[in-house]
Amino acid sequence: MAVVREFTLPDLGEGLTEATIVQWMVEVGEVVAVDQPVVEVETAKAMVEVPCPYGGVVTARFGAEGAEVPVGAPLVTVAVGAVPDDLAGTGPSAHGPEAGAPAGPADTAEAGSGNVLVGYGTSAAAARRRRIRPGGTGPAAGASRPAEQVAAGQDSSGAEAAGVPGAEAGARTGANGSAAARAADAGSRTVAVISPLVRRMAREHDLDLREVTGSGRDGLILRTDVECAIRTRQEHAPAGAGVTDAVGAAAGAAAPTGEERIPLRGMLGAAAEKFSRSRREIPEATCWVDADATELLAARRAMNVPGAPKVSLLALLARITTAALARFPQLNSTVDTKTQEIVRLPAVHLGFAAQTDRGLVVPVVRDAHARTVEDLSAEFARLTETAREGGLSLAELTHGTFTLNNYGVFGVDGSTPIINHPEAAMLGVGRIAAKPWVHDGELAVRQVVQLSLTFDHRVCDGGTAGGFLRFVADCVEQPALLLRGM
Image (cartoon, helix red, strand yellow):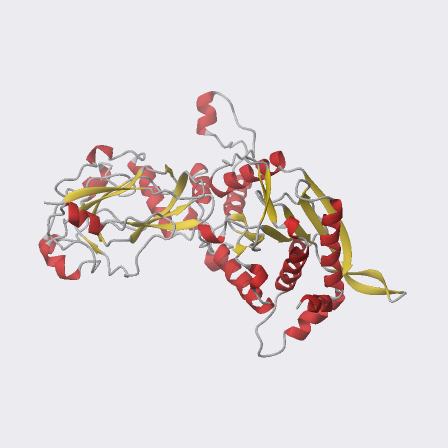
């Protein structure tokens, strides 16, 4: 007798209360192992693969791709002990419940990992997946469902019962819309799309993503690709052919031509809330200075000798920043508004702004003050690549103490950035450009950069902020100054 266990979206940590389903990784009727990833979700922080703590047969899934799921809502139901005898020797997990055996209280405890989402999983690798026809065993296992079942609304993108004894999820079948809508959603899985927003935009404009050419890495379809395809289709539409918005028509109001509404959810919503909170709570001020970066660039060229690990400019700026924070620890702090205390932090966990297809993220380099320039350069490269792939963990995106923002990569000179709450300061670096500069008493063309510091005026006064920024500028102009403290 199989025991059906319901797996709900676990506590995501860091105050996150919901996630968006990006991609289902299992089908109904499929055998899963303990701690095998069953769904990929997008939180306000990162993309996460969610492993299921139960081993057995998937009897139902809840939520279509692109749907938001609150913490505690069901994701899948699994029939523990429903694996037929012919699969007992090739089950997906060596440490899961014994195939075909009833799952008692002790077996249930072993079947579930009991871990939370952060740090979830065991070291055992999931074996090859096996699919079982709902209600079938033996030679019929793995056969596809009849077409009339799909037509009846039993598409696997919604909640569905698999016919395994003890299944309790059948009443939820069809909760995710019509069969046609789910079939369209299922068809989009073959397209290189990560963002649920891109999928939603395509559905709202009746756009087939298979006809869109992605400009992202490995052909990834980005939001700009969808916008361009929609715009091109509208430009080539016959004269007088308008775009009708179903919701607006139902409400009796026509949307202006070209208007687009983007929900503030997921990463976009989390960033908006954080920016707003920063401006509400932090009395910030900004100071800036121009610096001659010619010698810093020369030092970097000298370090990047053939055969040696490459050193990035960002790593050199990070090393200068950590040295400045050692002299001015007031800026490596946070304000506890509940206790009305300034909390100075012992370690520098350096965040840096990274632009990705999913928006702006701030990965964090742990213990940056204790790393060499080569180590910093390697860690920046690793985190940047992981961020672009959408694979950063919550630990790699949180608990920063100071942020370094290199907006010079966008070709701009200066900025007054918003502090990354709850930190106390952010150092901004503009583009390095050839400009006229007085050097050794003579006018010369030098590589000049603008540095800016936005700081929380509660943690220090202008003298401290100015001293910090001046030290950074001096080290940019004369990198040898860093040797004094070594």
